Length: 123
Image 1 (tube, rainbow, N blue to C red):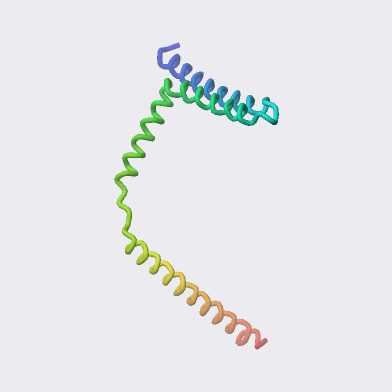
Image 2 (image 1 turned 90 degrees about the vertical axis):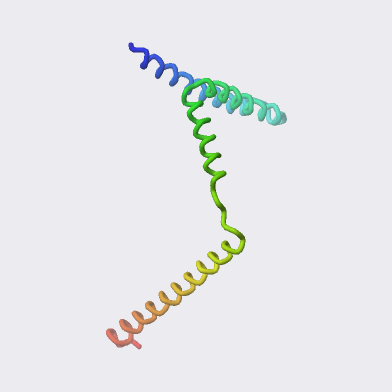
């Protein structure tokens, strides 16, 4: 087996171990008696923390952290519209919806008149 395959196998084992730790934390929550919900919640938090630690040392975890950092940087670059621009765009949307609703009503009424009154003579 080549070095690449060994590394891939180790990465898979790390991810599986992290998933197992999360599952153990959830199982610990359900194994705690009903009156001790704090201890059960602590089991879930401990499972998630342990899984996070395992993922931190995996290539997949580092890639996720890099992706999250890049996402935060990109989100900071977003230029949000001003309050005035937001109200203007909202007004245009409502106007468009009203005009479209009126158009659809006219077309529906026109087709109903055409088919029921003219073609079928049921008017």
